[in-house]
Image (tube, rainbow, N blue to C red; front, side, top):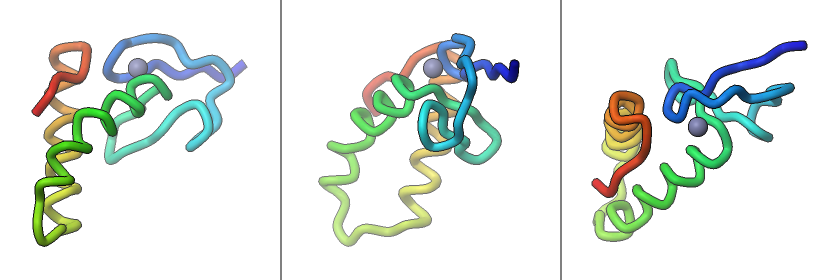
Length: 77
Ligand SMILES: [Zn+2]
């Protein structure tokens, strides 16, 4: 059986199916709860960004993930 470990919470993801129960963003694998957490953390920041810029968003997302990987969880930006 294929298993995968979430880079943030280090939980094992059983039977990983991309974009279903895990998400591959850049070089990182996130489980579903962590992906939800990432969106929750980014949402208020993105809402205040005018005009929206995709490069900026991608950078913000990668930075947030890297920070979360070090801390083991997502925290508000
Ligand atoms: Zn996780």
